[in-house]
Image: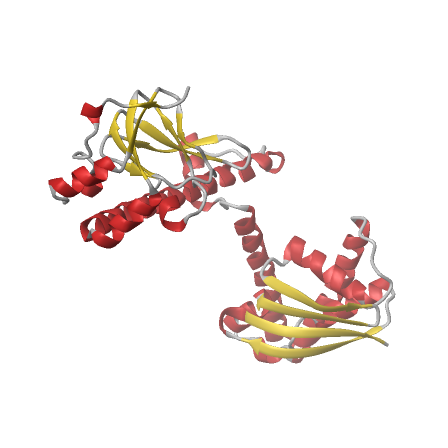
Length: 350
């Protein structure tokens, strides 16, 4: 049903919040430049993404601002009551409507052309300040909802991960349900990323403590040999895992980059990478982020006994296991605080 014109006697903007400081003659002038319409319950006043730019004032009744998800589901944003303004964003930036507005009860609404509204913002400082306060309130409300939503998602994600691990956790027995709920809330990872990083830290701790104990018992000269041997074998292991998962490895220098990426995906989330060259005879990978191995070595004060960058024998192990004949060259730019890492690896055909 189309909106209908309202009775002349109803046409007053005296209750609109952003006009509260205007003198009566100015208010009457604005009222005369508005279109006045009534809407039935569930009738659309403004449609999402439509190219219209009037500004609306709720004089009587209640309306609701509605947003739509990518899946087409309606998300209720906020309710509008007498005195509220909506549609000002499209009037200011000339963009499409950012939301839909639907009448919830019988509504009387005044519509002001965008050009007149922009003129008001220029000539009436009190209106401009009121609109700014309104927008600031909207931003604060949205920020609060984003934080609430993020916390809810993290909580749901943690429970989801726990439920997906029931095959492993089905034999656990807690003293009681209260202690179970408390420990899950305090210690169980809230996301897959957090779980992966925690496991990564455990791996690094085993690596560092093993090397420290070897150094203390058998001499520090043995530490670097053992570290290099571990990384070489790890490279061979990750190559076999990649092949077993069905990844087709190139029979050239690119294989080292492919296996490294699979290892980052499955076990080393703290590394980032840029593949700078991806050629059969010349492949270059820039690795940066955080080295858990350097971080634990610094913490245990054994960094000086090891050869860096630590991944060189890892790449050599990949080459050996895949049967690729290539040389590994490195350009280590940083081994910084907290394990900050920046190194470029170049693989060239031998």
